[in-house]
Image (cartoon, rainbow, N blue to C red; front, top):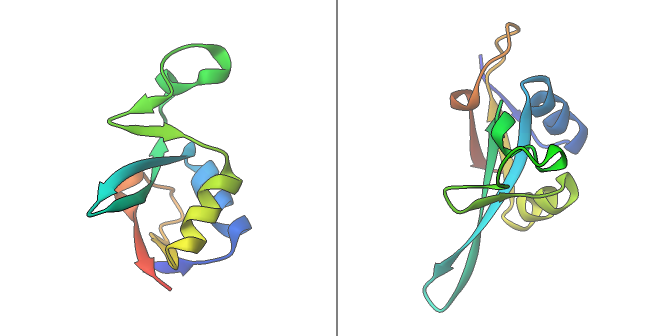
Length: 98
């Protein structure tokens, strides 16, 4: 059964337990810019600390959790996640309005 996460610690723990990292992308939206949120999972190739690859995937770039949470709050969003105790992958979450 899915559950909705709004607490920063809960979101971070859920993502990191699955190898998740926060990503953002700024994209044009009419006359301004809009920030898109994403989580990426198991992406060893984007480990910038080890210089093992680029820090971008399809226009998204890795950011700090604080920057990601600021964008999540600004968008009034929460994270709906799978409650599967076996863990999961990126297909088991979606952003929803709070």
